[in-house]
Image (tube, rainbow, N blue to C red; front, side, top):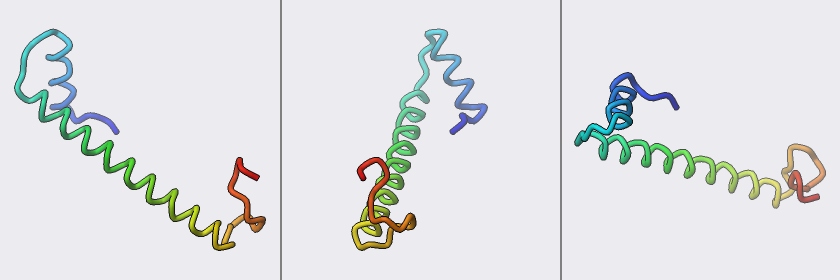
Length: 68
């Protein structure tokens, strides 16, 4: 996910060695967004495994890709 112009400017200041209190807020925000993405990915993966294990595999052979 791309950074906003403000976030990009903050990163540039940090790269130059400048101290800025907004850095911690940016790191927290990015960490929360990454955590949310992982939660969504895990949820979708679990739903797929449940469908496959119940025999509703969209490929029709009941196997999970890569584990047949």
